[in-house]
Length: 77
Image (tube, rainbow, N blue to C red; front, top):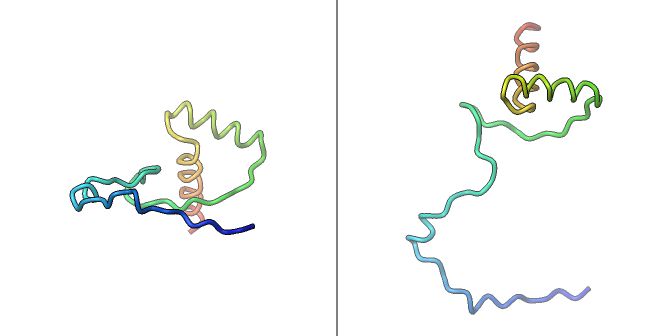
């Protein structure tokens, strides 16, 4: 497959004011410490229970998983 060259010459440069107004797009960090995204496999029934419990508490299910794991680690020493 041939690599194409894109001509950006007709796109004007951004001014310093425009660059200063730009904001990062994406999910904002929650809490005091930023979280690291990971992938984890959970049993469907367990995930359904976690999602239901998180919904009752009015929080994202990922945050509930984090809380559960943090509590368990604190108890284990």
